[in-house]
Amino acid sequence: MAVLNLTSAQFEETIANNDMIIFDFWAEWCGPCKQFGPVFEEVAAKHPDIVFAKVNVEEEQELAGMFQVRSIPTIALMREKVVVYANPGALPASNLEQAVQQLRDLDMVKVHEDMAAAQANQ
Image 1 (cartoon, rainbow, N blue to C red):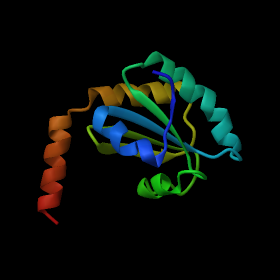
Image 2: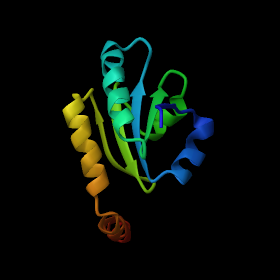
Image 3: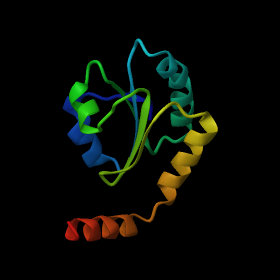
Image 4: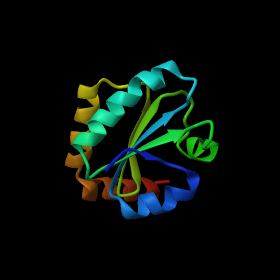
């Protein structure tokens, strides 16, 4: 799958129909974002079963707010509708590949159990 330029209008459908999504929050004026773009696209090309979604924070402020993006670029990984990683800063291709592998390897049964336990303790 090619990199998706995600909008708020597509968000619900995208997370409902895809188990794994990697988000790149960026802006046109952001130098580091522009440098990271080709890395994001290169890694995306190697993983067609994962949605790689670029979110322009200038155009999609609602999505940026939902993910609490405070600086860009910010990378966020979601699996089964759970954000399992979010961090500002561009990643080298090797680190992004490691993040993809960790996303694949996650024990989501345990993640959901841990989330339920945390909510029960609130």
